[in-house]
Image 1 (cartoon, rainbow, N blue to C red):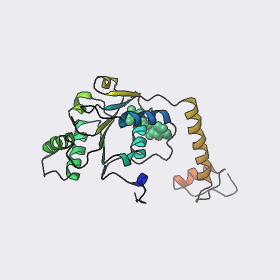
Image 2 (image 1 turned 135 degrees about the vertical axis):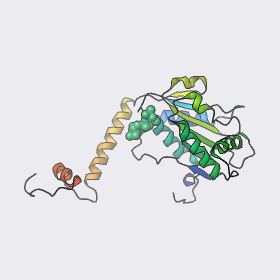
Image 3 (image 1 turned 180 degrees about the vertical axis):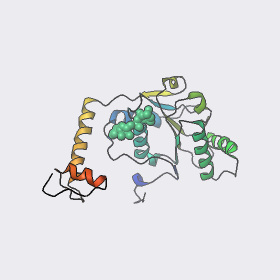
Image 4 (image 1 turned 120 degrees about the vertical axis):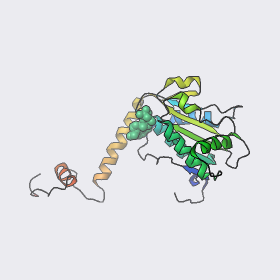
Length: 223
Ligand SMILES: Nc1ncnc2c1ncn2[C@@H]1O[C@H](COP(=O)(O)OP(=O)(O)OP(=O)(O)O)[C@@H](O)[C@H]1O
Ligand SMILES: [Mg+2]
């Protein structure tokens, strides 16, 4: 992303694998404010992870993505770790080790080296944020958490068992107002798209369908 020099546009020095912001992101204001508040609080002695918990598809990862983009300028390092499987976590942390230019190591050692590097306050990227996205297996995922340092850990998960090892924030279905806002923006967006550069006539869904499948247009007078 190009930097305009404003604080808000600045990316952290280390910024890895964060999914793009969803241009249709809607609502979740209270949740995002709360997340910012708890992650911004003075650090406890050990890193206490923050978990966004809720049922499948409710929007946990979306909230995490939006949070990271909104507050990226508050961190020196942000690393997004797909955490469904242990192998993905290892591969992601090995990439981070390379990005941090830790000595050339095997994957196993690289993971340990990252954990240790982030656990100390002396390392150059003090304010770090690790996001473990879709982390369903506590035992598998926890072993990778740095134990100290000035960083934060954010988890998204369907597993309520995280209550034993993290502070939980519930992600529920949209409120009525959020649903209305979502529908309104979708409708407005749909209208804008139809009036967009393709100049496609809004009343010709059949033509759109044929074009999308590489079929010749039918007689122009037949809709
Ligand atoms: N706040 C939002 N604004 C707009 N769209 C959203 C929002 N939250 C969720 N969505 C839509 O719902 C989809 C699923 O959201 P998301 O991936 O965040 O769910 P999840 O809770 O992480 O699910 P899972 O438990 O399967 O990982 C998104 O890809 C997006 O299309
Ligand atoms: Mg998710």
